[in-house]
Length: 193
Image (tube, rainbow, N blue to C red; front, side):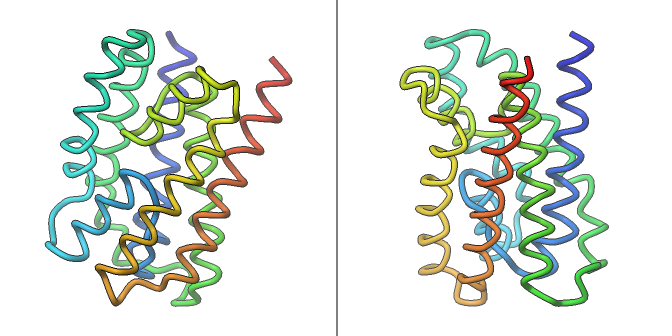
C-alpha cells in the first residue's frame, strides 16, 4: 500500500507539474482524457482536472466490472492527479521554457510521460484513456504506452481541428515524447521487477 501511495503522489505531482509549467503556458495540447480536459480549458475556460474526472467516470464503471483491481488502483490515481492538475494551476502563469515551444514540449513530455509511467508500473491510471490502455495491454500483452500514443494522436487531431491557437506540431512532439518516455519507463522498470 505504501508503494502505491508513493507512486500515486509522485506520478501525480510530475503530471500536474508538466501540465501546468509547460503545457498550459505554451498552449500545447496533450492527448487522451488530459487532452480533452485541455481542449475544454482552452475553448470554455473550465478546469481541466474536473473535466478529466467527469469524462473518466464511464471508463471507471467499465473497469469496475472488468477488473476491480484496475478500478480501485485507478480511481485513486485519477482523483489525485486531476486534483493536483487543478491545484497546481497557479504555477501555469510562470513559463520556465521562456516561450520556446520545443523546449516546453520536450520537458513537459518527459514530466508527464515519467508520471504516467510510474503510475502504470503500479497498475494505476490517471484517467480514462490510461485505464483503457491498461485494460487493452492486459488483454493483448502489447505495451500500454503504444495504446496511449495512438489514442493521444487521435485527441491531438481533434484538438487541432477545434482549437486554432494550439500548436499542432509542438503538441505532436510532446505527445511523442510522452509516449516514448512512458514506454521506456515501463520497459526498463518492469524488466527489473
